[in-house]
Structure formats: C-alpha cells, structure tokens
Image (cartoon, rainbow, N blue to C red; front, top):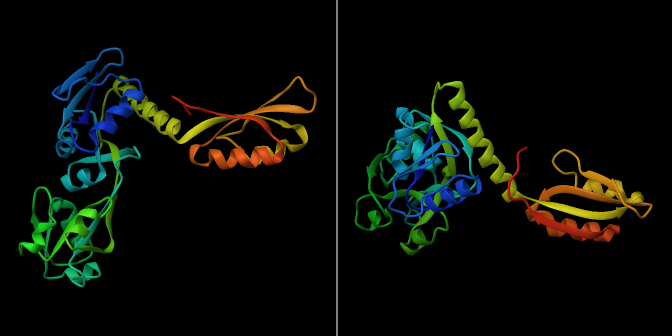
Length: 285
C-alpha cells in the first residue's frame, strides 16, 4: 500500500486535499483525522505538519508527500521534487526599511531574521555574503522594529504585511515556491509499488491538465478548416468529422481555458458556428 504525506493545515492543506479528491482518492472528512486508508486505490494518507513532511519522506517511512518547495529546501532533507502542482505559489524575498539595502551584497555584516533559516543561509553562502541569520517562528516583520535584525527574509504573496510594517522588498527573489510532490532521493521500491507511484503521478497530472484546458467543439466550412485548425491545434491534432451538410465539418480540440473566449471570437469571425466549450474533469495524456 502506497503511503503518502499530505499537509494537515495551512495554505497547502485545502488545495492538496481538493486535488487528491479530483484525482479519485478518498480524503478525510474531519480535520482531526491524522490518517485514513483508501483501500480501493491501495493508498494510505498521513496528515502531517507541512514542515515535517520532507523529513518523513526522506526517512523512507513514507513513499511520497505533498509540501511546499520552500519547505523542502529549508528542511535540507534527502528528498527531491518530482512534480510541481501549480498552487500555493509564492516568492521568497528580502525586505528592510527603505534604503537599508538594495542588493544581496549589501547584507554583509547584517543580521537577517527569518522563519526559513536553511533557505536564507544557503542563499547567502551561494553568493559569498557573510551575514548572521536569526530564526524566528511566525511573523518576522516586527524583528526590525524590535532591533532583532536589520533585514528580514520571508514569503511574499501580496506584500501587504511588509508594507504595513514600513518595509520594502529588494534584490532578486531568493526562491519561488509552489506545492510539489516529493520523494526520497534514490528511493528503491518494488515494481508493484513503483507502478502505484507512477499511477498517482499520472492522476495528478491529469487533474492539472483538466484544470488548464477545456474541450472546444465547433462547425466550420471546409474551405476555412486550415485557418480554424491553426487556432485550435489541440495537444496533438484536432478531431475532424464530416457533417451531413456537404461542405461542413465538425471539429473538436483541447484549448487552454484562459484563451477560450478569444479563440471562440476568432472562430466566429472565420465563419465557424455552434462553438461550444465543456469542462474536462479528468484525463490521461
């Protein structure tokens, strides 16, 4: 049975469980549940603190896990990213009082407060900057006001909290994070277990595609087909079928959902009619 770690709280928890549900896996009904078994899919889910998931996976006690890229890097665990999931995106940045610093080299000799000591220490070392790093749990914005540090390093989503504290970000992003699936580096498992891992990844990839694309159907005249297909090339090639009315064909193709309305307008201008889009609930590519 495949053993999978899932975030039990925070910004990763809800979207992770929603994606797993869309992928056909049972999920817990109450937030107090720490473990559930999905016998039909031969999977056991463990709901753990997001910061701990990389450690559990790297130990080999759990096969794979869902966590944040920033948390994986910060943990220093012997685990690796195997699939980005596209939600809980954030950017990790330095911030300070206006004029305190403009680039990472300015941090030499300063003290940086952060909840992600591993990420910051590695980033400073990679750039050859000798600075002190102070670990704080929770909000770090007040560290400068209280004299604990001259600069902070934190996850920035909108930047509102930093601006409210009178701080501004500077320099290049330290890292960009999102939810990811992780696995122990060099994990060796039985063929049957590996098959389950690959099935799990295919299901999640199917959800990602289903969320990104819609299915588009339309009718167009044969003489406009090539121009229409150029607008809707699909993933490989669109499906084209002749209609009862001579000179007309029906076309079906997957198109990016963000571009669907524009494509419908362009098809209509070409003379296409009966243009429909439908949601994709699951797929395998």
